[in-house]
Image 1 (cartoon, rainbow, N blue to C red):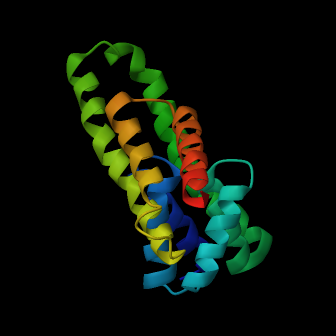
Image 2 (tube, helix red, strand yellow):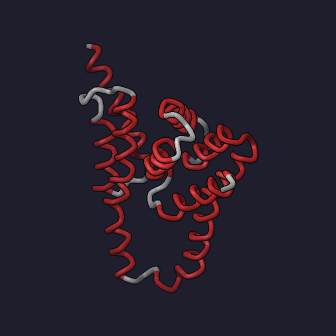
Length: 178
């Protein structure tokens, strides 16, 4: 099969069936790209993930660009990026077209509240995986765990979670040094 079609199909499938954004996609991308297809080594994947997190933009798009480029250069990055973006674009477009019909529906509201813990779990999974790969001790892992719990319990926006995690990490680091 043509690698471009296979990569587009793979990233489209991940884009369609992942709820929770880029961090929720990371374990699925890793399983497909590193474990099943062996297109990229695990160490290279972790490096690409670190670069994707540090560059501006959406994590899922960034990692798809870097993986596509590593596989087939510019064309590969274009194909994997489109595979990542298009499913979300069409799903959001469909929701936006029909949302006014069911935005006040109690059942829909409960469904969204029920999805929230699953999203937190999907975001926590790559956090633990990255911590294990980076050899972070069990004493330092509490910051992302607390951040995920804050999202789940209080429904804060991600920027507040980042601020809270950063402040907590700062004070934790100061306590460890003293």
